[in-house]
Amino acid sequence: MNDLLQKLMINATELTRNGQLQEATQAIQRALRGGASEVFGVSDPATPPPATRASIPSGEALVLDGLTRVIDPPPEIVEEILPEQSGVAVKEAVDLDSVEVDSPREERWLDGSFTHQGRTLAYKLYLPPGATGAAIAPRPMVVMLHGCTQGAADFATGTQMNALARDLGVVVLYPEQTQHANAQKCWNWFKPQHQQRGRGEPAVLAALAQTITAEHHVDAARVYVAGLSAGGAMADIVGRCYPDVFAAVGVHSGLPCGSATDVMTALSAMRSGSALAPSGGAGSPVPPTIVFHGDADATVHVSNGAAIIEAARKATGQTIGRMPSARTAEGHSGKGQRYTRTVYADEAGRSTAEYWQLHNAGHAWSGGSSRGSYTNPTGADASAEMLRFFLAHPLRA
Image (tube, rainbow, N blue to C red; front, top):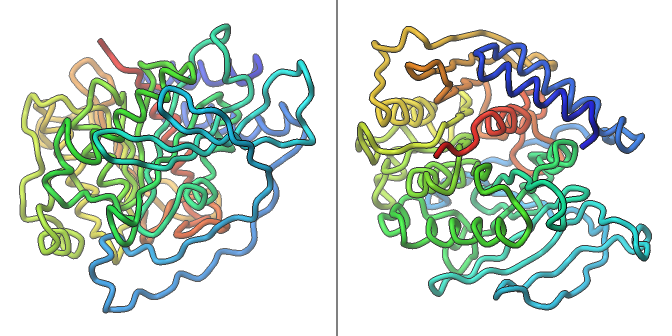
């Protein structure tokens, strides 16, 4: 990251800590807009018109997410098999035209496989330019959890997280659910065995994050997790189960931890909100949390987004009536999508939760690229705002 980008990001972090959220957002947007052209001399290519969302047949009620389209982008690189490293089988993506002997490493897009407690996950890993070697400063990392029927490549394309991470020097990890574990490749957020520390999917995701942290020189105090729909629900679970691993959580169109214990309660929570109390209580450690949810979401009811925020607030002993420090602002994206953003702070003035209610928006990643599945290109840029929020919240001792 060049000096200008670094200065802009430091400025954004300081503004966020001082409660100047609008100014912080503008600072990070300036950094993100200028980064690609300034560092590489090019701008991002234009994306095609938004794809029309396919209707969901009534017979697919057990797809606990609603994502029914997978896009596999055309291959742009040649893959080279590398030796296994510490039990993690890795395939490195290499651009053969750009590799020179003795030249510094450019950005990399890796495939890998990880096994923990008898569970094996494939993953993709994005490493920004220079993110190798012990001589450089440790980098932050975001773990991105896809929705049902999606995959890592599709999710990366749709969210455009790699393009933003390139400019900010952020490592991005995309674990991929298996069809063996769930026929629709959903994370099993609705099963009790996957809602606990040390068990099931939370355990393997946390172990994978820690392994990548150790192997790729990631800053252990700046590891974050985010997800869409079923992936968002699992991100909330993983953050609550491992607040010592994940410094902050991002949930897009998801459900709160403990909102379901089986298929029937999951479907009920998706339709109208959960009748169950979210897991955890006052005093339970919960990482800072940012939530995006469309108020026209017909797949996961918008009340679930508000419930995630309320559970996070209660876990720190906060209630709606006792929070005069909550700040609400109306706004709209550059393409006209309206939103309401509410920021909650603790007694010391530090932001602990941020809620973006996206008006007239459905079940799709806000501000994403139409080249990926289930995105809303006209919305506020959820990827950029999550990165802003994350980088302002390193893990506190």
